[in-house]
Length: 594
Image 1 (cartoon, helix red, strand yellow):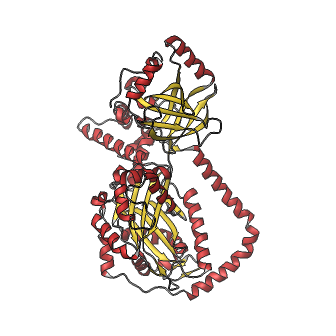
Image 2: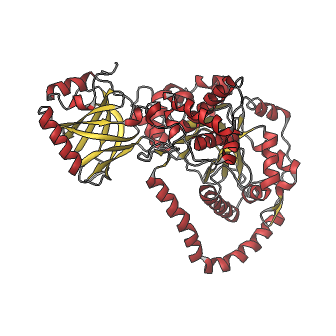
């Protein structure tokens, strides 16, 4: 259903209540808005009276709404000072008015004062939404929301070199690691393995899950983690694991996954205990996935807050500018400032690149506050525990060396068949997946040590190594560590650039101590000294250990499989410098990015 392009915010003030109802009924749901919308109360009492009421309401009570689609929420701009308050959940659902799809603004779970209020909106023209306010189930009022960001400014609005005008700061989502794990009955393992093998790596992965249709998914994989016998001789079951790195929130991703990939999920999880049968409500499947989520002990993000949409947009921006530069190479050369001014004029004239005039969005404030609190609270807790640590650390060091002297490193080497299966899943793109699983060395000491080490790793990757550099290694997009099987095993998964050989060499050369600190608690790891010495420095033994514990990643997806971490960072720098104030040397450096 198309929009009525003749409708604007002023025209809505002239409409009667029946006319507003008819317009709402005939309009599409439209996209969920982003950023700040200017609000107008629609009294439906004639243009003059309605206009006066709208101006009064905006001056003293309500100015609009600020949408954060990444967080699935909004805040209202209230009071004469435009304070952001009164939060609502934002989601798609059937309208109470006509049972057709709309965007629901639900206050029942987020605001005590407004818990009986529900708003519904539909897009009646590009960037213009008509809303209904309910008190309980009773329709009491109409309103409109206008989003200027939906209409790019004309090229003449400002000079090409001038920075973009100030607007309400946009927000983006932080990234989350999603791991759903379920035990596969022994008599169904072969069936699941066969289905994953049929899907194959890369190109045909959509036969199981339509990855590209899922919102906010950077990477995803389906892996069959083999079963066996643990170090105490007890059976460990095989399991099927879904892993994805996505833009928050988690619940929205799980709902999207069920809605768009229900049949594929049934093929791989259908054999697992308790998975809802065909015909079950989507909510039941979402709940099952939520119950089977496994938290990460540590999760590394190359650049926190850089969402999928930003990565793809900035790649398109670079391609567009490079095309422009290629087309003008035959012309007489110009000085760098003139070339950059030409690029600015080109981008300003492209409506589809209007977003590039604004700085990249940051994660929402509430998440940043939580991160800041965590960053300060952990060291403060450490200071409080210093008296205990002064006694415990020497005891721990003695026990560590006692265990290390008794460690027996594995001399196992990967067989050719295993290596061939792994190789068949690699080198289909600029990036590769890595998945490995191994047993933790027996005893409480090693388990507690690994728990503490991963806690420290998680703190480090959250607050210290979150800007494209993991202790010197810059080729990793995402990585995670998590415990499974009651902490008897650890699962490690990453997405990295280049070949596995260069990936392992990078770690050995730059952060062998970090590898040792974590993986030396794994059964069969090359022997270490004082937790961080030796170990991975025995290059061949370390590489054999990794290969033996690596699991074939037969179903894997990347949303930007031609982009390395370096490409993504360069694209972000191009966008950041496009309309920034640069001196002559900075301008030359910026142009050198192309």
